[in-house]
Length: 510
Image (cartoon, rainbow, N blue to C red):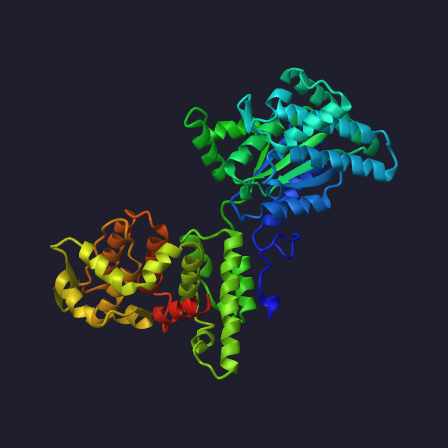
């Protein structure tokens, strides 16, 4: 059972397991790091931009496993987020890496004393002298540094070692730079390798802490050619935090450009066909006979690799549960197995899983269809009427006609075949549209008093344009895709999708 599911945790990337083109990106970055040493000597702040779930950690893990000319170490920022000073935690990781590597090899026993001395200087510098150590935070050159327990421990260590705790901030910076650079240089002299310090999981941390850490690395850690910092960044989240902190005084793009010397970007769009083919293989469907799931996900702009795998896993789980229920003579989920090869059903079901997982407020409104039906009609202009081939209905009349039998509309091939001539089919389509209508703006329902395919296409095209007024793109893009593929392009025949069954399963099992 488990081997059908996707691993949505960080995993080791390789060419055969890569379903989103991440391997090619990771390998290209690896070649830069391994072969362009002179470039990264003087440009040692590197950013890998990408949204949450876009594969940044998998890329880092691949480089970590395969880099040959640099010695890698990973700082997983979220593990240290509760520390009052992330920068001090990062320094301690670097210091411990250097000390442990060299002492364990027996190559430089003197490194232990230097590492401890530098660590204490770092604690002193980041705390900015003894008389400010007990403050909650200080601001230095626009960088907010948290104090507290670490600062109090620094007091004790300074007193024990009789270090000058009253020296100026600038003296502390110079002393730290000298000691830190000496520590890094000794590592390089002894091992022949520069350090490659990955800073990962920043998008799990509070945005303010991310900004403070990046600024501190830039100001205090990069004055050496023997250490390279490679930071995985959710650019949008950090940009929003920069805007909040600095208002409009500093442009987010400009700020990040000053921090990072070299930048890479995870793909904004992906070739979804490999993962779609893999998904259909996992659920036992011949992927050569299905055509539109990748186009659907692209149309609704749902292309994040981690989110796609999460949704596919949910669908696979429900199929597995359906088999279990069916084997125990419980047929509540039998329709899932019967619809296994119906791509239109799969598309609609996956869409509802997306709403359930990532747009719960919208999903909740859809699940209360009666309330939404009444609300949509009431919001229409008083003079609006619903037009069909057999006549027109004022909205109050239509509401009265439907009120005794408001149920989740179905979607079937009959809509495509009889949309021009059959009023029952037209009303079914209107109710289907009402279910997915956006609620942030008023949009008129399409007029279905038509007598030709050409006229129908004109009506639908005008309706699609009116949907653009809404910001609820997850709804409007779905309506457009379904109507365009089933009615305008006629790509599906013989399908039948029951919305009520889908919602029942999600509420029962998820």
